[in-house]
Length: 283
Ligand code: NDP
Image (cartoon, rainbow, N blue to C red; front, side):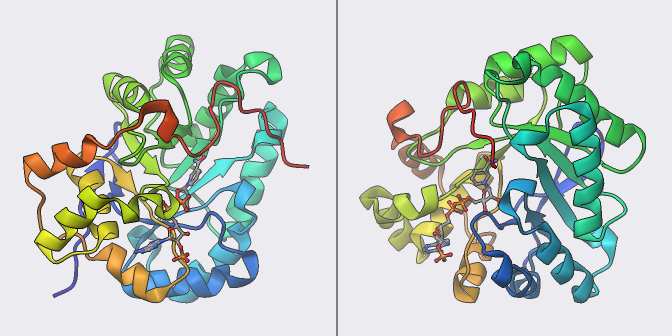
């Protein structure tokens, strides 16, 4: 029986498949082939970014697939060098052209960069709202926004992002950013959902996986889904694509969910940069 991926409702009335496929660190030369394989497995939600350098190749796979546009959900993100309004508008045009789309499902501010651009990420947010107004983005959101960043853009514009895409996995629950996202009425997208593989050797997760005859990756992704978050694991391997997709035929108990949440290491578990200080701008 074909797997049905649940859809979640975003706060603007559109829907998003809860499980997708991420293409961070998929080399451009292998992206078309990798995304094609993911679509064959059944993924319909693809998460890319201007910074990943593989939008064009993602677009090649999407158009070659022949899958109707309304069955696909495509996300991209504004690169860190392009927060100025003119740059954001120009590169959003380029994103659509590279992806071969006349509209995108979700477009995010990749990082808030509070120490750059005079800290004006609210101005950047205002520019993204133009893309919804002109119909070229079905939804817009943010990524790596801390509670104070969310509070500020909502206070200044009155518009709540559809999602906040943040680092979250069993070793780093990122509870404060997650709670703030929910308090504003947005959904959490959990990036690096298996901590780039780091959680897969954990004994607690391995024990729970064995109890369900599932793999540690499947149990971890299932944990995210049962917490109501959106995930898009990355893998280059077709076998792992299928493995990560097969998470809707079993259920963790509340106790198992709590045990996995208990692996949280707080800030020590963070694998990526801290959004309060991150100021990387690609050359
Ligand atoms: P993930 O947590 O998805 O882990 C990916 C790594 O785990 C790869 O090395 C992959 O190796 C391995 N892997 C995947 N599945 C399995 C499996 N079943 N068993 C064993 N190993 C496995 O990390 P990502 O950082 O890629 O995060 C996922 C997505 O989140 C990204 O692709 C991107 O879309 C998004 N993201 C967003 C960020 C942001 O700032 N907004 C930052 C980071 C990620 P292999 O390929 O060899 O299988």
